Amino acid sequence: MNEFEIGLMSYLGREKLEKLGKVKVGIAGAGGLGSNCALHLVRSGFKNLKIVDFDVVEPSNLNRQFFFLDQLGRPKVLALKENLARINPDVMIEAIQQKVDRNNAKQLFDDCDAVVEAFDKVECKTMMAEAFASSGKFFVCASGLAGWGNSDEIRIRKVHDRFYIVGDFVTGVKEGIPPISPRVNIAAAKQADLILSFFLDDADNTVNVNCQEG
Image (tube, rainbow, N blue to C red; front, side, top):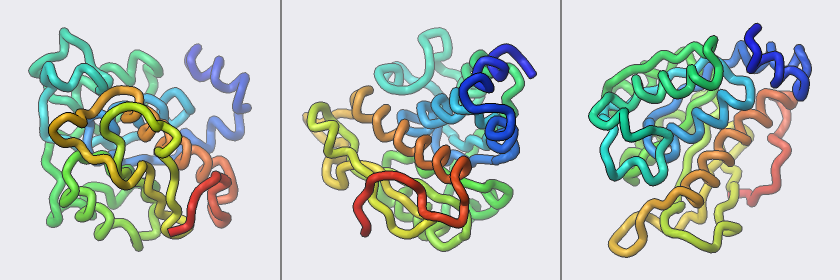
């Protein structure tokens, strides 16, 4: 057990920390949502992640994604793996530089206990929901987190006990409404907190969060 884990154990206790260490979380997309959700998961005690993204780090990513200037041009999954290992050097990251699509989504995340949808495009979000809404895995996705202000509108909608959506369900990225760090990070943190709550509580019960039923 390294110093990071010793420090975290002082808050969670050994039993909870060991429980989180056995959970494998899949993250589809390593952009604003995915990179920051991974950050929160690792800081919370998860150490077994599978992250899938085909893209590389670009200057326009740096305002909200967990990357740095000296990582420009590098595959996002490899840069993120490096950054997460600086938090917990014993983290186990399966970094896959590949595009997720309808043909491979289920296979890519078949060995995961939870799956995070962290894409930008609506059609990709829909594809992930169709693949995992009834899979039996704990599944969280996001919808509506662009712009700034009104952050209390970023809320949690429960679809069923293993499927939750985070966002304001309205505000997508478009001309004049860019993706900005605070709202993106709020959504990413809520995604991570849902997963944390599910695996620390009794998995047979509803996640203990304030949300609206959908």
